[in-house]
Length: 313
View 1 (tube, rainbow, N blue to C red):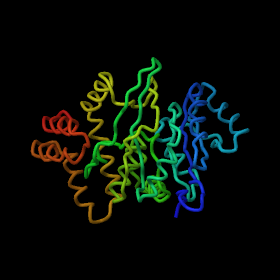
View 2: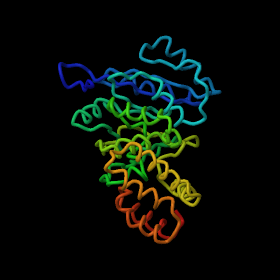
View 3: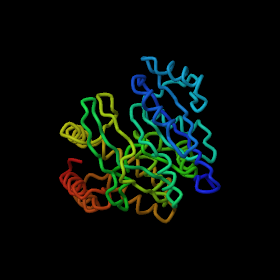
View 4: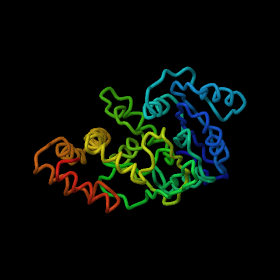
């Protein structure tokens, strides 16, 4: 049983996996916000992905005087943040610790980890939360993620940025298993947050989405995906939809879910996979009719149903 910190006054043990690439300008504030977390025993394991701005050297120097920070030695560049996170998760021994993920450019709110460890202790295997997007100009926007979960929402959306995640040891281990099995599909998924949520939910384990914002989510030109707010974000996502990237992403998540799911649920997922890969009108309409189970926000349900039905998605 993992240590939740609820008994005998012990603090929860938490390992934070930090993936970096050219982020030295943001790291001091981010790492401070992690190490300053109260009510938990936290340590950070970082892997730099071939930075050219001094990030790797900065991390090494900090690790030489901060025992709670470890840097993976001489890792070869993976080429993407998701692959770097997968490397961290499969390389680092987290034992019975809870597992969190950190982007290099965010700022964690005080008490984030303790709050989410307490939520896990109620019987959840994963916790995530809403975030506050902020820009260099000082604009702040709450990005709500806690719309009610739906039966198959894990095939089309994550429950929040991965930087808000906290996992039980068994969910971290299940994810490792699916990343390293001989016929693994999981490493092909572009976003670790979507992958982990799909694994947990398809396996039948419960997830809590915290409505309180626990991360200040920095917005800048180097964001991999961003906060999904504003006209620019909408245009980016429309391009992804028109290129069928989102559909292909859902196909990968469904294939992973089939590997993760109990045997009794695999047939239903196989049918969804058939609808996702078919192109005929009947299949599109059948898939569109399931939109209410595949997105949490009512507005998004209507939009995705329309885009699927007319063949844009």
